[in-house]
Length: 628
Image 1: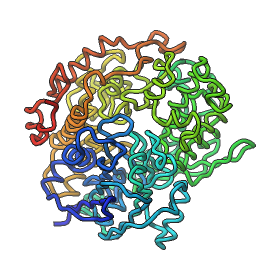
Image 2: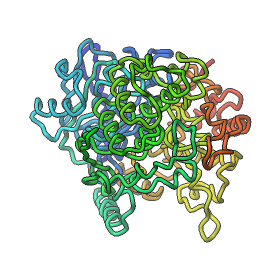
Image 3: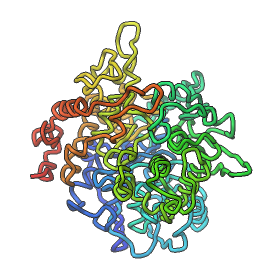
Image 4: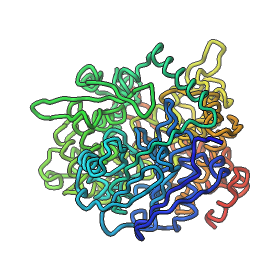
């Protein structure tokens, strides 16, 4: 029977310099699907408790899903995971582009990297064959230089790479993994894990046709989505994320301004309509009709922007722009280019620089500390210089490379108030003081603050003509009625859980949210891909299973309910703007989290998943990893 997966997982042991292939079986893939579930399975079973995230005992997992590599919109993604050097817990991130599809086409459903090499290497995977190659000559190179040199060495211009630049090599704790030059697996610091293993890149190329069990259904769904995009174009295909008007985000209070401190930003016009100002084209991921990726080019007296590195998306415009008080889109685009070249998470880099700017303006950092850089809000040159210093761990950049919590602790003098993070992962560019379900999500997320699997409450405030929520996904899970933004009641907790289960399901299959596939579409697609008689219920349980295993890993690693909290800044209002009266009540949030634990089948006092819940989810084996 033709299926969309191979039942083959490739293992790379860098200590021994060997590779081998495992076949875990069809049941394994139906239970897990891919992505987060494979990552959690490996981390719990194979990484010793208390292992150093940057030591050889940690494992780095590249995990596509059963839908990855199909020629259909949204099926280009793969997850990357490890014990996070940023949070000390479950680390996972998702990334698009072309690498995930090529790894699947090359014959493998996942890649597990273990041990560490004493010299830089890269892995070449083509049509079922894996070869370790030396990469000493590539160490220190940018991602663009690395991609060009490896493709030339291989004589394969179509080879797709996942790789790191100097930020990953220098183990910046929020270094990312880059799929090509434009797509970042940004969160959790997994580029630092790759650097610790001296693995510069993985190059993949395959010729296998992933048509699935019902190829015609996949083709028809792909054609229909392409027609929908063509006949009903949305802003994503024209502007990408954050490429249009941003003023509403300021007026709502959603767009972070000057390190989440302020509520007003009259200069916002400088960051809007990126494509009208410096855009040259829109691009897309493998086989996707949406084409939501900006490509920009600019040259001014101050900056030159290379289009090979794409362009800034919403999170980058916010983190390196408004969060740093910078309103020059060319400066932001240059910083985005550097982050992609050096393999730095733009969110992590932007928010830690904004933190340093606030410390500088309050006298906690001096010109001597910054190496003479006038690190004030709005200084685009200073922001760009700090990206360079962080990537190379030079001067103040060495401290900022450790992340917000360690930097604040070292600086002291009340700097903790300026460190906007959860579990040491910087907040994304969405404000939990506006969206209280997002506040629950940031606090509870196993990976630290994350906007992709947390609820955006602005979806919940309107009703359709019959009085129901317009969100088909949430409505289909039983969240029927509109809810107030400021609510932290049980109805908001329930909606938050539903949203997380659906989003993390996407992170297992693994699919992108941009094409807007419904649950029914995903069931049809998964049935056509695998031949299994899956249901919506089964797929949602896949997401719940992944969330619960991730929680189990965190509890095993010593995280507790005390780590389920927000940054101190979230408990006070902004300085002016829509959230001038918007601080979150910490007691109310704690009660919401207690309700969350109970609804999830976790112990209400400790937040630890119960043995019964693990058994219900078909992963009773994980009970042995629960804290005693």
